[in-house]
Length: 161
Image 1 (cartoon, rainbow, N blue to C red):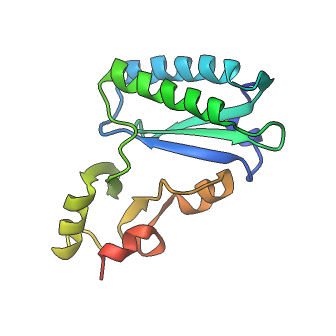
Image 2 (cartoon, rainbow, N blue to C red):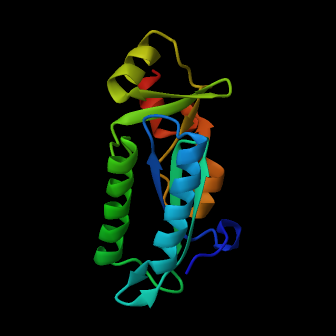
């Protein structure tokens, strides 16, 4: 059951998938349509899931699920991962590699491997004030308040000493 993202409670579980590149406008239109279709049919043991999505910065796909109505199950999570894998193949992007970091350089979103980000921190090319994307947030409330934060307020801080 697809609902507007804003209607989901802050306790809703989120999964964030960052792309290794920006999507084109045409790709965004297609991906939005595919996400709407997927979520409309997304179930857990036959029960509807109240869910939504956002695409931010032409690069991040966030799935959100209100688990108060029906919780995600292993099968429903597997189906969402399969859906994301299908997007990876169709659009030749990487959405599941968690060993990469996205951060802001002005209005531009940069994407680096964790190793490169660590080097940049040592070289002071990024700082504790660099805005990073903390894709480890667990729910919509955390997503809204702690996803896009200074590196000093995220797990990224460990590289900035």
